[in-house]
Length: 95
Image (cartoon, rainbow, N blue to C red; front, side):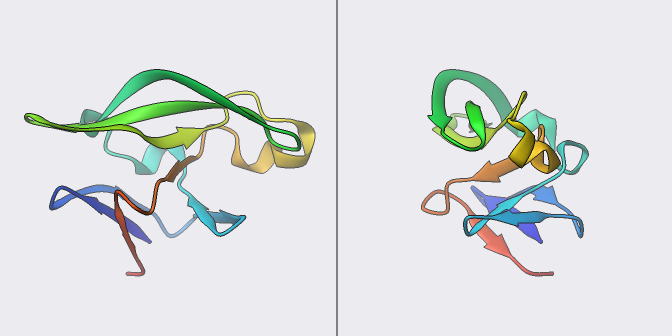
């Protein structure tokens, strides 16, 4: 799978994990130069606290368009630090 944003390839992996219709990409598969930390946090009852990234490229920014679970609950331990994306902001394609 790969993620395209702003006509740029920002993540690519053949080891994604699908949870609740979202593809979670391993941390080593994202191109860090497009990501900056966002202070937003949300909570999922079974996954735990999610942290967010902004997507950035030149002057363009998509606020809180990607999220990950740095310390997930046990039921979601397989997605620790994996990154998922807001599908209304990015294009996720099968490769």
